[in-house]
Length: 347
Ligand SMILES: Cc1cc2nc3c(=O)[nH]c(=O)nc-3n(C[C@H](O)[C@H](O)[C@H](O)COP(=O)(O)O)c2cc1C
Image 1 (cartoon, rainbow, N blue to C red):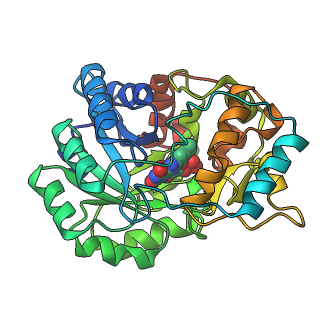
Image 2 (image 1 turned 180 degrees about the horizontal axis):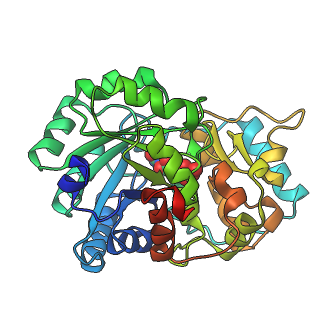
């Protein structure tokens, strides 16, 4: 058992990111480490969700993923008329009906402040706070340390490692370009060993493109001590992903996981759709900077899901989507991947 595994108290070094508390708790129960994606939560939402997870984790390990950089909180206005007109035009072109304006917490661009969310993470029993992007301010790092909680950091380049080592990271997540969401340009195969070399002995987890035991084995061969999942959790039984997206992901190929700025304004790998294609056509305006693009398209994306407009529906997903062919429980996924830690004969 690696020192990191001992400190965390997990049976398996399968970490997984999810915005669904049910998936996070299921990972913890299965012996892995569930990480709640909380960058868009308010303080009250995070408190309630961590309390639920604690009650459903059977003592297993869980943590919280946050984004440590400015740009959250209240949104600047107004949005450019050209962009508002383009969205209205897409609504007409694709017959996107009016829908509930209630919105989904997954798309909501507002959130609590970083110190508030860190305080709630510590109070809510998180064993680690993991940066998805950026380095925490010294006072935030102090809050994490004072809470006796580990600090992990996602890196997409070996150049980022020194910034997190300087603030005393306990482990690193090397996330390759094939992963879901906001990614760098270096693939997992090339990134992981470089991050291991730059880490000065800090444990490294491999993220991006892990969906079966062969990929777990590859991650360990590259020097990682465990793996960090994202995409494969979207189609687990416990995931709250709307049915229209679940159907699309189970049918998608790896080539359907494309880089787009149409959803949030930052380059992220997501399921190709008629919506993401439309933003790349001649005459389309360039997507707005975050968080404005999310504000611009939020209501329309909610309507697309509410009305099950399959061809338009998109979600962040990585290239491993081409290997996600059937729904499975989180426990089955963790067990299946566990074979990768045991040796080649169990391929
Ligand atoms: C729907 C979705 C949303 C994500 N959002 C974030 C995020 O907010 N912060 C973050 O650090 N990683 C985020 N990720 C990336 C995961 O943490 C993880 O690094 C990545 O999914 C691993 O690669 P894989 O998708 O090939 O499994 C997201 C992933 C998915 C599937």
